[in-house]
Length: 401
Image 1 (cartoon, one colour):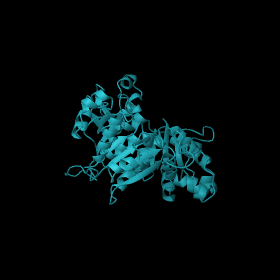
Image 2 (cartoon, rainbow, N blue to C red):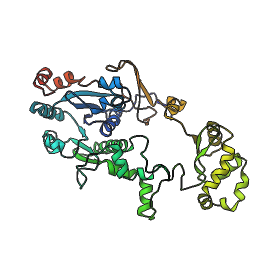
Image 3 (tube, rainbow, N blue to C red):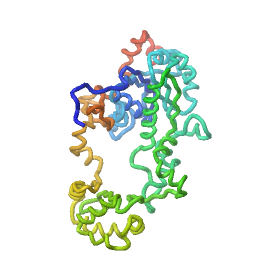
Image 4 (cartoon, helix red, strand yellow):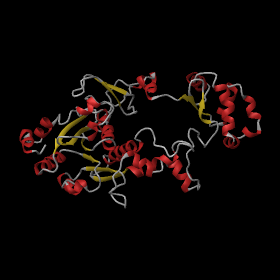
């Protein structure tokens, strides 16, 4: 769809979100809400802030509390600091909650209660508050108190057991998939809760269950068909030829999943004779003999670069794509044309321009985006605490913020 002439839609405009989260799952959730128009205020621990401020591949930014891991999912947010172990700090948070619509936290279950600012307390301050708690295993059950990091969830969820091939599995996925899926699940639940009347609910997001929910085919193959999931590497076991194949300069993914695609592929490669062989006659035959079929196709595929084959095969209706590196895909014209990356010049605390990813969504032709870069720790203390009728200087002197 082509961009319209109207202003970008911001469906969550007018909502105030308090982001009490750290590192990735929670910040990523609130990152989505910010792009959808919500005002997101990071409520960070006084003196240290979000741990992600100290994480990332650039040590100088970590030392400046503007680590790359923080920059990745905090654009468009404001930042205030608070000491929740100080009575005036807790009182300040309660005041802030009264002005808010949504609160997101990803502490271990029970931590907010021990600090005296759990859901039962906060809903007394704001009865319509949407409170979202993201944790590794959920707010109840025998694992509720276990600490959870992304790789822990990848392991216990079964993701690692089916990632890689028979030689390499179990293998960790190459990015924090559990944190990211948990954050998206929370953002979806919050957006849905905003539509309820009257508002006000407690949302319990389990990263483990969020990941399992996205593994529907794998889980159902076991629960319904009795097939134990296994690691199949780059092969798509539901069809053949479907998977990664060796081209002249690297791998190309080809998904000739339909009969007509199988015909188009073999004709284009000059291998129509393969269709007369009994071991490749049907879809099931090709699945059973997929490695022999792969070898036949690769004899031709290795004669040209992967990108050339991808262009040619897509042109005739056979889904294909070269296996790219992250830098390669970020420099593709497709990414630039969609407005997926957002540029912030001379970011305070960073001292240089940065680019960050947005959402992968377009609304009426517009890619949702935010207008302000990731904030320095406590950058909005003065404005926000004063807006609530509090004295920021006094709160700081008392150690409450």
